[in-house]
Image 1: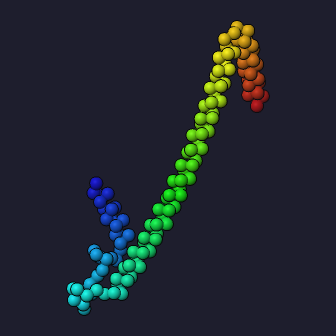
Image 2: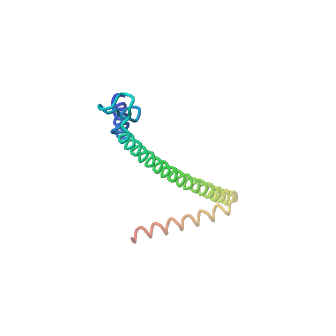
Image 3: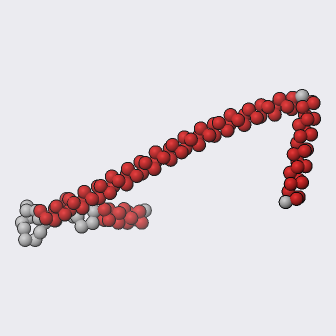
Length: 124
């Protein structure tokens, strides 16, 4: 927990470096009610730069999230389509196994596939 607060302080210091609380620094030659306008303008410019940086960064994050969401939606649709194809294939296998003659035909085809794969890997 201590390292987290240290990191938070470092991040805050990096974002607002050179700016004291309230966004202004009182100069020693001025009274406590007068503001050094030049330092205040520099502080405002620094804050504007940081705000613009954060705005661009959040826009980039938004674009990245949108592209990932689009990609995940596409993957979900592809998974649904493949699930449909596999369920259709399983239904066809069930029909093949329901009859005895089809079972013999399947055994014959499966044995040819196994023999073909065996010969293929042995000659490779």
